[in-house]
Amino acid sequence: MNFELSASNIINIMFISAGIGVCGLSLIHVSSGMHIRKEAKKYFQVFFSLIIIYICMHLTRMMMDGRTELGVYTGIRIITFIEFLVSGFMIYLLSLLILYIAKPGKFGVTINRVLFIILLIHTVALLISQFTNFYYYFDEMNSYHRSRGYAMSNIMHILMLCQNIFLILKYRDKFNKKLASALWFYMIAPLIAIILQLISAKIQFIILATVVAAVYLYFVIVRIQMERYESQQKETTRLDTELSMATRIQAETLPNIFPPFPERDDFEIYATMNPAKEVGGDFYDFFLIDDTHLGLVMADVSGKGIPAALFMMVSKILVQNYAMMGLSPKEVLESVNKQICANNPEEMFVTVWYGCLDLMTGKLTAANAGHEYPVLKKPGESFELIKDKHGLVIGGMDGVKYKEYELQMDSGAKIFLYTDGVPEATNAESELFGTERMVKALRIMENDRPEDILGVVNAAVVDFVKEAPQFDDLTMMCVEYIGPKEANDNKESE
Image 1 (spheres, rainbow, N blue to C red):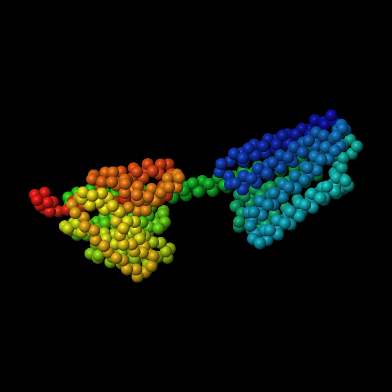
Image 2 (cartoon, rainbow, N blue to C red):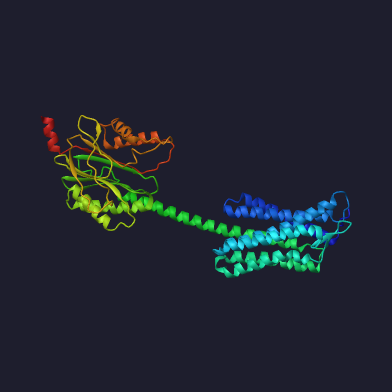
Protein backbone atom coordinates (compact mmCIF):
# COMPACT_ATOMS: atom_id res chain seq x y z
CA MET A 1 0.00 0.00 0.00
CA ASN A 2 1.45 3.37 -1.07
CA PHE A 3 -0.93 5.57 0.99
CA GLU A 4 1.22 7.75 3.27
CA LEU A 5 0.07 9.11 6.60
CA SER A 6 1.44 12.54 5.89
CA ALA A 7 0.17 15.62 7.72
CA SER A 8 -2.04 16.57 4.75
CA ASN A 9 -3.49 13.05 4.46
CA ILE A 10 -4.21 12.91 8.19
CA ILE A 11 -6.03 16.23 7.91
CA ASN A 12 -7.95 14.97 4.87
CA ILE A 13 -8.95 11.78 6.69
CA MET A 14 -10.17 13.88 9.63
CA PHE A 15 -12.20 16.09 7.29
CA ILE A 16 -13.66 13.10 5.47
CA SER A 17 -14.46 11.11 8.64
CA ALA A 18 -16.10 14.12 10.24
CA GLY A 19 -18.02 14.79 7.03
CA ILE A 20 -19.35 11.25 6.75
CA GLY A 21 -20.30 11.23 10.44
CA VAL A 22 -22.00 14.61 10.41
CA CYS A 23 -23.90 13.90 7.18
CA GLY A 24 -24.89 10.45 8.43
CA LEU A 25 -26.31 11.90 11.66
CA SER A 26 -28.05 14.62 9.66
CA LEU A 27 -29.59 11.98 7.39
CA ILE A 28 -30.89 10.08 10.43
CA HIS A 29 -32.26 13.33 11.85
CA VAL A 30 -34.00 14.13 8.56
CA SER A 31 -35.61 10.69 8.33
CA SER A 32 -36.90 10.86 11.91
CA GLY A 33 -37.95 14.52 11.80
CA MET A 34 -41.60 14.72 12.80
CA HIS A 35 -42.13 18.40 12.13
CA ILE A 36 -40.25 18.63 8.83
CA ARG A 37 -42.36 19.10 5.74
CA LYS A 38 -42.55 16.11 3.43
CA GLU A 39 -40.93 17.97 0.53
CA ALA A 40 -38.03 19.19 2.67
CA LYS A 41 -37.53 15.72 4.15
CA LYS A 42 -37.22 14.06 0.74
CA TYR A 43 -34.97 16.84 -0.52
CA PHE A 44 -32.45 16.56 2.32
CA GLN A 45 -32.53 12.78 2.30
CA VAL A 46 -31.29 12.92 -1.30
CA PHE A 47 -28.98 15.87 -0.57
CA PHE A 48 -27.12 14.28 2.35
CA SER A 49 -27.02 10.91 0.58
CA LEU A 50 -25.25 12.57 -2.37
CA ILE A 51 -22.77 14.29 -0.05
CA ILE A 52 -22.00 10.99 1.70
CA ILE A 53 -21.49 9.30 -1.68
CA TYR A 54 -19.27 12.18 -2.79
CA ILE A 55 -17.12 11.99 0.34
CA CYS A 56 -16.91 8.19 0.27
CA MET A 57 -15.84 8.22 -3.38
CA HIS A 58 -13.21 10.83 -2.55
CA LEU A 59 -11.91 8.75 0.37
CA THR A 60 -11.84 5.58 -1.75
CA ARG A 61 -9.91 7.37 -4.47
CA MET A 62 -7.40 8.58 -1.89
CA MET A 63 -6.94 5.04 -0.56
CA MET A 64 -6.53 3.59 -4.10
CA ASP A 65 -4.20 6.34 -5.32
CA GLY A 66 -0.76 4.96 -6.23
CA ARG A 67 -1.78 1.31 -6.02
CA THR A 68 -1.14 -1.03 -8.95
CA GLU A 69 -3.07 -4.14 -7.96
CA LEU A 70 -5.32 -5.88 -10.44
CA GLY A 71 -8.59 -3.99 -11.02
CA VAL A 72 -7.38 -0.70 -9.53
CA TYR A 73 -6.92 0.86 -12.98
CA THR A 74 -10.64 0.49 -13.83
CA GLY A 75 -11.98 0.94 -10.29
CA ILE A 76 -10.24 4.23 -9.55
CA ARG A 77 -11.48 5.73 -12.80
CA ILE A 78 -15.09 4.69 -12.13
CA ILE A 79 -14.92 6.04 -8.59
CA THR A 80 -13.48 9.37 -9.76
CA PHE A 81 -16.17 9.66 -12.44
CA ILE A 82 -18.88 9.10 -9.80
CA GLU A 83 -17.23 11.65 -7.50
CA PHE A 84 -17.25 14.38 -10.17
CA LEU A 85 -20.74 13.44 -11.35
CA VAL A 86 -22.22 13.57 -7.84
CA SER A 87 -20.65 16.99 -7.24
CA GLY A 88 -22.62 18.20 -10.26
CA PHE A 89 -25.86 16.78 -8.93
CA MET A 90 -25.21 18.48 -5.57
CA ILE A 91 -25.02 21.95 -7.10
CA TYR A 92 -28.04 21.08 -9.29
CA LEU A 93 -30.06 20.20 -6.19
CA LEU A 94 -29.10 23.49 -4.58
CA SER A 95 -30.25 25.30 -7.71
CA LEU A 96 -33.59 23.47 -7.59
CA LEU A 97 -34.05 24.52 -3.97
CA ILE A 98 -33.42 28.17 -4.81
CA LEU A 99 -35.70 27.92 -7.84
CA TYR A 100 -38.45 26.37 -5.69
CA ILE A 101 -38.26 29.19 -3.15
CA ALA A 102 -37.96 31.98 -5.74
CA LYS A 103 -40.97 30.75 -7.77
CA PRO A 104 -40.18 32.90 -10.84
CA GLY A 105 -43.51 32.10 -12.46
CA LYS A 106 -43.57 31.06 -16.12
CA PHE A 107 -39.77 31.37 -16.32
CA GLY A 108 -39.36 28.64 -13.71
CA VAL A 109 -39.91 25.79 -16.18
CA THR A 110 -37.44 27.35 -18.65
CA ILE A 111 -34.80 27.86 -15.97
CA ASN A 112 -35.23 24.29 -14.76
CA ARG A 113 -34.76 22.99 -18.30
CA VAL A 114 -31.61 25.08 -18.74
CA LEU A 115 -30.23 23.76 -15.45
CA PHE A 116 -30.95 20.19 -16.51
CA ILE A 117 -29.27 20.72 -19.89
CA ILE A 118 -26.19 22.10 -18.11
CA LEU A 119 -26.15 19.02 -15.86
CA LEU A 120 -26.49 16.77 -18.92
CA ILE A 121 -23.59 18.54 -20.69
CA HIS A 122 -21.51 18.17 -17.52
CA THR A 123 -22.24 14.41 -17.48
CA VAL A 124 -21.36 13.97 -21.16
CA ALA A 125 -18.15 15.98 -20.70
CA LEU A 126 -17.14 13.72 -17.82
CA LEU A 127 -17.71 10.65 -20.00
CA ILE A 128 -15.58 12.16 -22.78
CA SER A 129 -12.88 13.04 -20.27
CA GLN A 130 -12.56 9.37 -19.37
CA PHE A 131 -11.09 8.75 -22.80
CA THR A 132 -9.27 12.06 -23.37
CA ASN A 133 -7.88 12.78 -19.90
CA PHE A 134 -8.97 16.39 -20.43
CA TYR A 135 -10.07 17.06 -16.82
CA TYR A 136 -7.70 14.70 -15.01
CA TYR A 137 -5.56 11.64 -15.63
CA PHE A 138 -3.89 8.75 -13.81
CA ASP A 139 -0.24 7.86 -14.41
CA GLU A 140 1.17 4.35 -14.67
CA MET A 141 1.07 4.13 -10.86
CA ASN A 142 -2.64 5.04 -10.84
CA SER A 143 -1.89 8.34 -9.13
CA TYR A 144 -4.43 11.14 -9.70
CA HIS A 145 -3.30 14.32 -11.53
CA ARG A 146 -5.20 17.37 -12.76
CA SER A 147 -5.02 17.96 -16.51
CA ARG A 148 -4.89 21.15 -18.51
CA GLY A 149 -8.66 21.31 -18.72
CA TYR A 150 -9.36 20.76 -15.02
CA ALA A 151 -10.68 24.29 -14.58
CA MET A 152 -13.30 23.52 -17.25
CA SER A 153 -14.85 20.90 -14.97
CA ASN A 154 -16.11 23.74 -12.78
CA ILE A 155 -17.94 25.56 -15.59
CA MET A 156 -21.24 23.91 -14.66
CA HIS A 157 -20.82 24.93 -11.04
CA ILE A 158 -20.02 28.50 -12.05
CA LEU A 159 -23.02 28.78 -14.42
CA MET A 160 -25.43 27.42 -11.83
CA LEU A 161 -23.84 29.60 -9.18
CA CYS A 162 -24.47 32.69 -11.35
CA GLN A 163 -28.06 31.59 -11.91
CA ASN A 164 -28.57 31.08 -8.17
CA ILE A 165 -27.14 34.51 -7.34
CA PHE A 166 -29.45 36.08 -9.92
CA LEU A 167 -32.54 34.36 -8.46
CA ILE A 168 -31.69 35.25 -4.86
CA LEU A 169 -31.10 38.91 -5.74
CA LYS A 170 -34.10 39.29 -8.05
CA TYR A 171 -36.56 37.49 -5.75
CA ARG A 172 -34.97 38.43 -2.43
CA ASP A 173 -38.36 39.39 -0.97
CA LYS A 174 -39.37 35.70 -1.11
CA PHE A 175 -36.34 34.51 0.86
CA ASN A 176 -36.29 34.41 4.63
CA LYS A 177 -33.26 36.38 5.86
CA LYS A 178 -31.84 33.40 7.74
CA LEU A 179 -32.37 31.14 4.74
CA ALA A 180 -30.81 33.67 2.37
CA SER A 181 -27.70 33.90 4.57
CA ALA A 182 -27.42 30.08 4.66
CA LEU A 183 -27.71 29.87 0.87
CA TRP A 184 -25.05 32.58 0.41
CA PHE A 185 -22.79 30.68 2.78
CA TYR A 186 -23.34 27.42 0.90
CA MET A 187 -22.37 29.09 -2.37
CA ILE A 188 -19.41 31.10 -1.09
CA ALA A 189 -17.82 28.49 1.20
CA PRO A 190 -16.88 26.05 -1.64
CA LEU A 191 -15.39 28.94 -3.64
CA ILE A 192 -13.16 29.86 -0.73
CA ALA A 193 -12.26 26.18 -0.37
CA ILE A 194 -11.30 25.98 -4.05
CA ILE A 195 -9.02 28.99 -3.66
CA LEU A 196 -7.40 27.41 -0.59
CA GLN A 197 -6.90 24.17 -2.52
CA LEU A 198 -5.14 26.05 -5.30
CA ILE A 199 -2.67 27.20 -2.65
CA SER A 200 -2.45 23.79 -0.97
CA ALA A 201 -3.66 21.10 -3.33
CA LYS A 202 -2.98 18.32 -0.83
CA ILE A 203 -5.62 19.38 1.71
CA GLN A 204 -9.26 18.83 0.69
CA PHE A 205 -10.85 22.04 2.00
CA ILE A 206 -13.74 21.48 -0.40
CA ILE A 207 -14.90 18.48 1.68
CA LEU A 208 -14.97 20.55 4.87
CA ALA A 209 -16.68 23.49 3.18
CA THR A 210 -19.34 21.32 1.54
CA VAL A 211 -20.27 19.50 4.75
CA VAL A 212 -20.31 22.58 6.97
CA ALA A 213 -22.34 24.60 4.46
CA ALA A 214 -24.83 21.74 3.86
CA VAL A 215 -25.38 21.10 7.57
CA TYR A 216 -25.81 24.82 8.26
CA LEU A 217 -28.34 25.12 5.42
CA TYR A 218 -30.24 22.13 6.77
CA PHE A 219 -30.16 23.54 10.30
CA VAL A 220 -31.56 26.88 9.13
CA ILE A 221 -34.37 25.29 7.09
CA VAL A 222 -35.36 22.97 9.93
CA ARG A 223 -35.27 25.89 12.35
CA ILE A 224 -37.53 27.94 10.09
CA GLN A 225 -39.97 25.04 9.78
CA MET A 226 -39.91 24.49 13.55
CA GLU A 227 -40.71 28.17 14.10
CA ARG A 228 -43.59 27.88 11.65
CA TYR A 229 -44.78 24.72 13.40
CA GLU A 230 -44.64 26.44 16.79
CA SER A 231 -46.52 29.41 15.35
CA GLN A 232 -49.16 27.07 13.93
CA GLN A 233 -49.44 25.32 17.29
CA LYS A 234 -49.99 28.66 19.02
CA GLU A 235 -52.61 29.55 16.42
CA THR A 236 -54.27 26.14 16.90
CA THR A 237 -54.30 26.64 20.67
CA ARG A 238 -55.84 30.08 20.19
CA LEU A 239 -58.51 28.68 17.87
CA ASP A 240 -59.23 25.84 20.31
CA THR A 241 -59.69 28.39 23.09
CA GLU A 242 -62.01 30.45 20.94
CA LEU A 243 -63.98 27.36 19.92
CA SER A 244 -64.35 26.34 23.56
CA MET A 245 -65.59 29.83 24.33
CA ALA A 246 -67.97 29.66 21.36
CA THR A 247 -69.27 26.32 22.63
CA ARG A 248 -69.97 27.82 26.06
CA ILE A 249 -71.62 30.89 24.55
CA GLN A 250 -73.79 28.76 22.28
CA ALA A 251 -74.78 26.47 25.15
CA GLU A 252 -75.75 29.49 27.24
CA THR A 253 -77.95 30.92 24.47
CA LEU A 254 -80.13 27.80 24.58
CA PRO A 255 -82.43 27.16 27.53
CA ASN A 256 -80.42 24.75 29.68
CA ILE A 257 -81.86 25.02 33.18
CA PHE A 258 -84.53 22.44 33.97
CA PRO A 259 -87.22 22.77 35.03
CA PRO A 260 -87.22 26.13 33.21
CA PHE A 261 -90.43 27.39 34.82
CA PRO A 262 -90.56 25.80 38.26
CA GLU A 263 -93.65 27.83 39.18
CA ARG A 264 -95.60 26.29 36.30
CA ASP A 265 -97.29 22.90 36.74
CA ASP A 266 -99.39 22.86 33.56
CA PHE A 267 -96.59 21.47 31.36
CA GLU A 268 -93.21 19.77 31.60
CA ILE A 269 -90.36 20.19 29.12
CA TYR A 270 -86.85 18.89 28.56
CA ALA A 271 -84.34 19.36 25.71
CA THR A 272 -80.75 18.42 24.81
CA MET A 273 -78.22 19.25 22.07
CA ASN A 274 -74.99 17.37 21.36
CA PRO A 275 -73.07 19.18 18.57
CA ALA A 276 -71.07 17.12 16.05
CA LYS A 277 -68.30 19.75 16.23
CA GLU A 278 -67.25 22.19 18.93
CA VAL A 279 -70.18 24.36 17.91
CA GLY A 280 -73.23 23.28 15.98
CA GLY A 281 -76.00 24.57 13.74
CA ASP A 282 -78.97 22.95 15.46
CA PHE A 283 -80.98 24.85 18.02
CA TYR A 284 -84.10 24.47 20.10
CA ASP A 285 -85.96 27.10 22.04
CA PHE A 286 -89.01 27.50 24.22
CA PHE A 287 -90.45 30.61 25.83
CA LEU A 288 -93.65 31.92 27.35
CA ILE A 289 -95.25 34.34 24.92
CA ASP A 290 -97.72 35.28 27.65
CA ASP A 291 -99.21 33.52 30.66
CA THR A 292 -101.24 31.13 28.53
CA HIS A 293 -99.11 30.50 25.43
CA LEU A 294 -95.84 28.57 25.12
CA GLY A 295 -93.64 28.96 22.05
CA LEU A 296 -91.74 25.86 20.87
CA VAL A 297 -88.93 25.91 18.29
CA MET A 298 -86.79 23.18 16.74
CA ALA A 299 -84.41 24.13 13.93
CA ASP A 300 -81.42 22.95 11.92
CA VAL A 301 -79.04 25.32 10.08
CA SER A 302 -77.26 24.17 6.92
CA GLY A 303 -73.60 23.39 7.52
CA LYS A 304 -71.64 22.94 10.71
CA GLY A 305 -69.08 24.79 12.78
CA ILE A 306 -68.80 28.51 13.53
CA PRO A 307 -70.61 29.82 10.38
CA ALA A 308 -73.62 27.64 11.16
CA ALA A 309 -73.48 28.68 14.82
CA LEU A 310 -73.55 32.38 13.91
CA PHE A 311 -76.43 31.83 11.49
CA MET A 312 -78.18 29.79 14.16
CA MET A 313 -78.01 32.62 16.71
CA VAL A 314 -79.43 35.13 14.22
CA SER A 315 -82.25 32.73 13.30
CA LYS A 316 -83.04 31.97 16.93
CA ILE A 317 -83.31 35.64 17.86
CA LEU A 318 -85.51 36.42 14.85
CA VAL A 319 -87.93 33.55 15.54
CA GLN A 320 -88.33 34.50 19.20
CA ASN A 321 -88.69 38.22 18.47
CA TYR A 322 -91.46 37.70 15.90
CA ALA A 323 -93.14 35.08 18.11
CA MET A 324 -93.18 37.47 21.07
CA MET A 325 -95.07 39.97 18.89
CA GLY A 326 -98.02 37.59 19.02
CA LEU A 327 -97.81 36.56 15.36
CA SER A 328 -99.23 33.22 14.31
CA PRO A 329 -96.74 30.39 13.48
CA LYS A 330 -97.10 30.91 9.70
CA GLU A 331 -96.61 34.67 10.11
CA VAL A 332 -93.52 34.09 12.28
CA LEU A 333 -91.90 31.86 9.65
CA GLU A 334 -92.80 34.23 6.81
CA SER A 335 -91.37 37.23 8.67
CA VAL A 336 -88.17 35.39 9.58
CA ASN A 337 -87.76 34.16 5.98
CA LYS A 338 -88.19 37.71 4.63
CA GLN A 339 -85.58 39.04 7.05
CA ILE A 340 -83.08 36.24 6.30
CA CYS A 341 -83.48 36.50 2.52
CA ALA A 342 -82.90 40.26 2.65
CA ASN A 343 -79.29 39.75 3.71
CA ASN A 344 -77.97 36.25 3.06
CA PRO A 345 -74.86 36.51 0.80
CA GLU A 346 -73.64 33.04 1.83
CA GLU A 347 -77.01 31.55 0.79
CA MET A 348 -77.34 29.57 4.02
CA PHE A 349 -80.72 28.22 5.09
CA VAL A 350 -82.41 26.80 8.16
CA THR A 351 -85.23 24.31 8.63
CA VAL A 352 -87.64 25.40 11.38
CA TRP A 353 -90.59 23.86 13.15
CA TYR A 354 -92.43 26.42 15.25
CA GLY A 355 -95.47 25.77 17.38
CA CYS A 356 -97.57 27.81 19.79
CA LEU A 357 -99.22 25.79 22.56
CA ASP A 358 -102.33 27.22 24.24
CA LEU A 359 -101.79 26.19 27.85
CA MET A 360 -105.49 26.63 28.69
CA THR A 361 -106.99 24.47 25.93
CA GLY A 362 -104.08 22.27 24.81
CA LYS A 363 -104.46 23.44 21.22
CA LEU A 364 -101.09 23.42 19.44
CA THR A 365 -100.85 25.57 16.31
CA ALA A 366 -97.72 24.90 14.27
CA ALA A 367 -95.98 25.57 10.96
CA ASN A 368 -93.12 23.63 9.38
CA ALA A 369 -90.39 25.15 7.17
CA GLY A 370 -88.77 22.03 5.75
CA HIS A 371 -88.09 20.44 9.12
CA GLU A 372 -88.50 16.85 10.38
CA TYR A 373 -91.94 15.49 11.22
CA PRO A 374 -92.94 15.84 14.89
CA VAL A 375 -93.92 12.77 16.91
CA LEU A 376 -97.08 12.97 19.01
CA LYS A 377 -98.35 10.80 21.86
CA LYS A 378 -101.98 11.21 22.82
CA PRO A 379 -103.18 10.14 26.28
CA GLY A 380 -103.54 6.36 26.47
CA GLU A 381 -101.89 5.90 23.07
CA SER A 382 -98.32 5.50 21.75
CA PHE A 383 -96.00 7.87 19.97
CA GLU A 384 -96.90 8.32 16.29
CA LEU A 385 -95.21 10.28 13.52
CA ILE A 386 -97.27 13.29 12.41
CA LYS A 387 -96.68 13.91 8.71
CA ASP A 388 -97.47 17.61 8.77
CA LYS A 389 -97.50 20.15 5.93
CA HIS A 390 -93.98 21.11 4.90
CA GLY A 391 -92.98 24.48 3.51
CA LEU A 392 -89.70 25.64 1.93
CA VAL A 393 -86.69 26.09 4.19
CA ILE A 394 -86.10 29.53 5.71
CA GLY A 395 -83.66 31.45 3.50
CA GLY A 396 -84.48 29.38 0.43
CA MET A 397 -86.54 31.99 -1.43
CA ASP A 398 -88.10 35.31 -0.58
CA GLY A 399 -91.89 35.66 -0.47
CA VAL A 400 -92.65 32.06 0.53
CA LYS A 401 -96.03 31.46 2.19
CA TYR A 402 -96.34 28.85 4.94
CA LYS A 403 -99.33 26.82 6.10
CA GLU A 404 -100.47 26.20 9.65
CA TYR A 405 -102.07 23.15 11.21
CA GLU A 406 -103.48 22.32 14.63
CA LEU A 407 -102.94 19.42 17.02
CA GLN A 408 -105.04 18.84 20.09
CA MET A 409 -102.99 17.96 23.16
CA ASP A 410 -105.11 16.73 26.04
CA SER A 411 -103.75 16.27 29.53
CA GLY A 412 -100.92 13.73 29.44
CA ALA A 413 -100.15 14.23 25.74
CA LYS A 414 -96.51 14.52 24.70
CA ILE A 415 -94.80 15.89 21.60
CA PHE A 416 -91.27 14.98 20.56
CA LEU A 417 -89.27 17.36 18.34
CA TYR A 418 -85.84 16.63 16.88
CA THR A 419 -83.37 17.42 14.11
CA ASP A 420 -82.23 15.06 11.33
CA GLY A 421 -79.15 14.12 13.38
CA VAL A 422 -81.36 11.58 15.21
CA PRO A 423 -82.84 9.53 12.33
CA GLU A 424 -79.70 10.02 10.21
CA ALA A 425 -77.25 8.84 12.87
CA THR A 426 -75.03 6.34 11.05
CA ASN A 427 -73.18 3.27 12.28
CA ALA A 428 -69.93 1.78 11.00
CA GLU A 429 -71.84 -0.16 8.31
CA SER A 430 -73.28 3.13 6.93
CA GLU A 431 -76.75 2.13 8.13
CA LEU A 432 -79.10 4.92 9.29
CA PHE A 433 -80.81 4.88 12.68
CA GLY A 434 -84.05 5.85 10.94
CA THR A 435 -87.42 7.13 12.13
CA GLU A 436 -88.75 3.64 12.84
CA ARG A 437 -86.02 2.94 15.42
CA MET A 438 -86.54 6.42 16.83
CA VAL A 439 -90.28 5.91 17.33
CA LYS A 440 -89.65 2.46 18.79
CA ALA A 441 -87.18 3.99 21.28
CA LEU A 442 -89.74 6.68 22.20
CA ARG A 443 -92.28 4.01 23.06
CA ILE A 444 -89.99 2.20 25.53
CA MET A 445 -90.67 4.68 28.35
CA GLU A 446 -93.41 6.75 26.73
CA ASN A 447 -95.36 7.17 29.98
CA ASP A 448 -92.38 8.56 31.86
CA ARG A 449 -91.17 12.15 32.17
CA PRO A 450 -89.73 13.97 29.09
CA GLU A 451 -86.22 13.86 30.53
CA ASP A 452 -86.33 10.06 30.87
CA ILE A 453 -87.76 9.66 27.35
CA LEU A 454 -84.91 11.70 25.83
CA GLY A 455 -82.41 9.65 27.82
CA VAL A 456 -83.76 6.42 26.30
CA VAL A 457 -83.65 7.81 22.75
CA ASN A 458 -80.11 9.11 23.21
CA ALA A 459 -78.99 5.74 24.63
CA ALA A 460 -80.58 3.94 21.67
CA VAL A 461 -78.73 6.17 19.20
CA VAL A 462 -75.40 5.73 21.00
CA ASP A 463 -75.87 1.95 21.15
CA PHE A 464 -76.69 1.88 17.42
CA VAL A 465 -73.81 4.11 16.28
CA LYS A 466 -71.25 2.58 18.67
CA GLU A 467 -67.72 3.69 17.69
CA ALA A 468 -68.68 5.43 14.43
CA PRO A 469 -68.00 9.18 14.43
CA GLN A 470 -70.87 11.62 14.94
CA PHE A 471 -71.45 13.47 11.65
CA ASP A 472 -74.42 15.62 12.63
CA ASP A 473 -75.73 17.53 15.63
CA LEU A 474 -78.07 15.52 17.86
CA THR A 475 -80.87 17.76 19.15
CA MET A 476 -84.13 16.67 20.82
CA MET A 477 -86.98 18.19 22.83
CA CYS A 478 -89.97 16.61 24.51
CA VAL A 479 -92.97 18.50 25.94
CA GLU A 480 -95.73 17.00 28.07
CA TYR A 481 -98.95 18.93 28.34
CA ILE A 482 -100.60 18.62 31.76
CA GLY A 483 -103.15 21.40 31.51
CA PRO A 484 -104.66 23.81 34.05
CA LYS A 485 -105.01 22.47 37.57
CA GLU A 486 -108.72 23.31 37.70
CA ALA A 487 -109.46 21.38 34.52
CA ASN A 488 -107.56 18.33 35.80
CA ASP A 489 -109.40 18.47 39.12
CA ASN A 490 -112.73 18.53 37.28
CA LYS A 491 -111.72 15.49 35.21
CA GLU A 492 -110.72 13.61 38.35
CA SER A 493 -114.01 14.46 40.08
CA GLU A 494 -115.99 13.25 37.06
